[in-house]
Image (cartoon, rainbow, N blue to C red; front, side, top):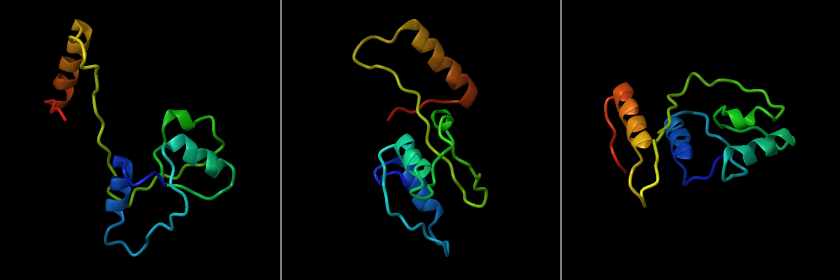
Length: 104
């Protein structure tokens, strides 16, 4: 399982609130690739997103549809210098697709 200080872990923990089944967590990793390598080495199973970097592992994925799972995704850019015109155009394109940007 991904470590507790991540947004992904918060999403997973929240999804299991009030459910009769609770994951038996015996290992917590920093990121999904390290967790996938443990699963690929036959050390158990994991709840992780199916991301492109996992394509090289010989794993089977089962989509979980009975839990309300969603993640925060952020648009990020370097802030210690001026915003390049191309970065501004990308920001505006994203705003055009999703409606607004809120800074964190």
